[in-house]
Length: 308
Ligand SMILES: Cc1ncc(COP(=O)(O)O)c(C=O)c1O
Image 1 (cartoon, protein in one colour):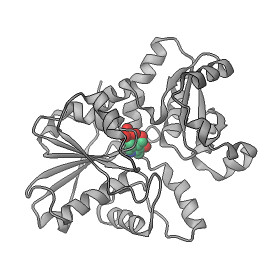
Image 2 (tube, helix red, strand yellow):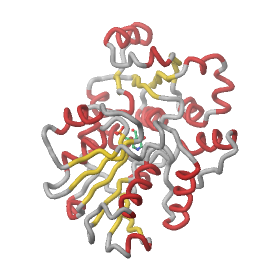
Image 3 (cartoon, helix red, strand yellow):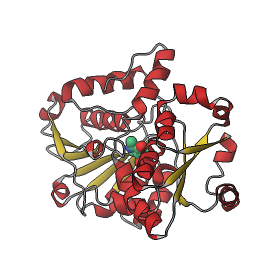
């Protein structure tokens, strides 16, 4: 059975004045620990792992990764052993300290995930067959879930985000990291709809990988002006936007993905770049588990904290 999340309507003066209807699809509320797009991306991958008789899942991620957090919990729930290949070999020096300081890895560890910390250059080999082969030699057989959980089965899962009722919106907006989630939305969107992806990181490489999953569909565009300097880079302007949005709408946003998307949407509204009287559906892809770790870093930098 498909899981359906609710659409929450947003009442803000800046929207009302322009006749724009904005709703947020609360995928973040699908599950307390397998939140948002992770739920969608893991659904068919876990089914595949079970049907192929695997007992171990192995995946890749950064030290604050939403995907690592969700997979560790989903793995525990379904009775898999889990292994996380984590970017940053400096973390291997003192696991006890890392677990004390890093809430994402502490959670994953508490779910039984084993870690292998690798250097940034080694991590870049994550799709190299020789590197994967070395992981098979080290860990034995496993079901491989790629970084960010993105593969064809993840895209299939993300196609289930949109319901029939959602096909009445003019625009579907989503944050983009690896491009898996937007690919599912593009595949499911109606011909008259436009899917806007807000890149959470710099770069021009995502179009090609999205096209691999969506063929020659034309109804989408990537916006590249709202990454705030790059992946997981944030500043006081973004923090204050996230906190104001939360206060006005009661919807918490994360600083790495959904906060940047919503900042972008409201900026496009202000610049009158949406058709007047149009309707927008913004997908809340979750990511709130990362706020605690980000706040620890903000505290060290003496910056204001994110409220959720
Ligand atoms: C909370 C959240 N939103 C959006 C994304 C971007 O999704 P994708 O990598 O499928 O583009 C991610 C990363 O997977 C994420 O963790």
